[in-house]
Length: 289
Length: 94
Image (cartoon, rainbow over all chains, first blue to last red):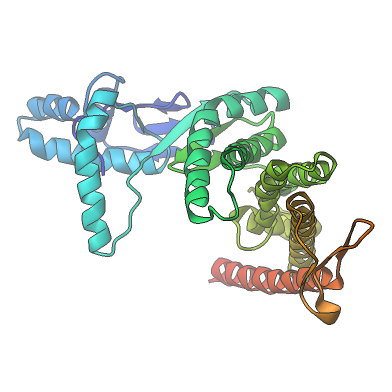
């Protein structure tokens, strides 16, 4: 749900052209009509959705609330496609929080579970492996730290007998955060120097990229779960030298990434599909991942 | 199809095998640090971990149960991979 007081803004990699929206990273074009173009031409990172709706309504001489409602629907669809972000000021965000919470609770009661957050696209520099790694780490560290802290707190409350120490909870929180950052950074490193963007959807992070050959696709899919997973194995081996419980739990969290190579995870399914395309050149002709 | 199943088996076997091995190793380290007594996880040929505290120190054995579970995970992953591949192929043809 997107509210009238939110401020839409185009991500750095998205350009508004005369008859379509161009994603300069993936090369995708989304055709738009004249009215949608007029609405989107008013997106400047300062106007709220309501102000945009009112301006367009004045130009066409129709009721503002109807245009605003249409614009909110368009904005929601573009946000779903990672073509529009919402850069809402903290004050406005605080004022919408009760509405968001109310809608979420109503949907829970009705049995329609829909996450209350929206997608945010973060374009980052992926010119080399080092730059890609650092860019991903810079963009995701804060979100990853918050998610890690929340997960660790939940674990600490649920399993207080197993995790009696505060420092164990801290090490698990750090491990969750490092795991999330390393997972996406490993994808970006394998992808370099191909341009890419990060899509942050609540606790779900994704790396978006243009079509790549299956061999590279396999490396990109496999790097995410494998690099932090192997790092976790090394941390656990190291824990026996230091006799540290904190390192055991941290290593365990990191090594859980290895499950990403199985069919239960999207990365594992993509890795298998790409590997088969690499091994079977007859199916590979013109295939892009 | 066979290649998908084989690749899925290898990925599943390695992922679960490595994860299980390091989990068992981690449990042994925690048992050592917390001073736990002797215990066994699993039974007979399907023993996953055997931790024995003796007068000389401790003895940890990672049993064949770990390999058996990894093989089972590999087989399940191969089946899942083959089913997903069959669905994708039929979707492409249809």
